[in-house]
Image 1: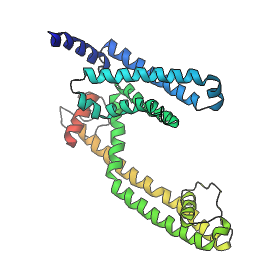
Image 2: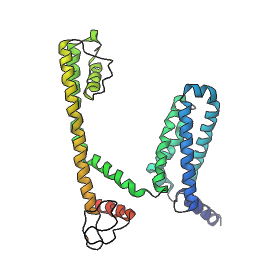
Image 3: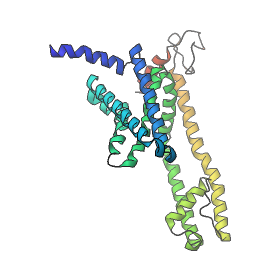
Image 4: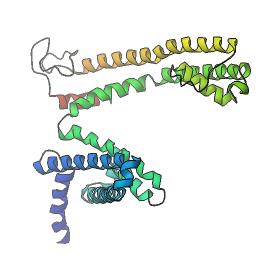
Length: 286
């Protein structure tokens, strides 16, 4: 009897907390996002010393209130979830847990409270609330492009690491500690800042040979910046072409359609809904 009484409560909580198709579920998620944004505003205001001196106590009380609400929400999610362990190990489950830990850690390490900025990741739920899941497909294309280019990017960064080590070591030998290049790591730092065209100006060469190497490093930096852009662009173009081929017409079975296309460009038939295209794309990838 106890089990039958609890099941409807769990189902009702699950519908509200995890569901977005009901009014209660949408209102819960929207209220949750508002609370997350308010908590982040509180955290940002607390980082301003003048505001903290005047309203520090109020801000901390608000932070503890937000943490108590998010803790209760996390416990309820575990309670009503059909598989609590699966939720706890999921992406959102880990983010939900990390969102409440900084405030508790701040009791022992005060500066840890600012790590609570990670709560902003929870706002990603707005894609589900506003039924913008189809737009996540574009981010998946970008992510897959980066994964496909990971070997080339690794080779590129390895080459850059070798170059900055060589240039940094040369500058250490040429300029020396008297010009600010006190060690090879310090000189490598200068090479990284220079080759990425940031140029803080805290370390500058003074000798003619050092200036010549610095000029070569700067010119090399401009050419190096174009390499990862070309790699990612090529992989992104290939991934987009693959994705277009996966969006097939159910009538003529021809692909090559854009992700936002409504009708087939070959026969004019209506294409599947965007949500179904995502499922088909995932199945095809697997």
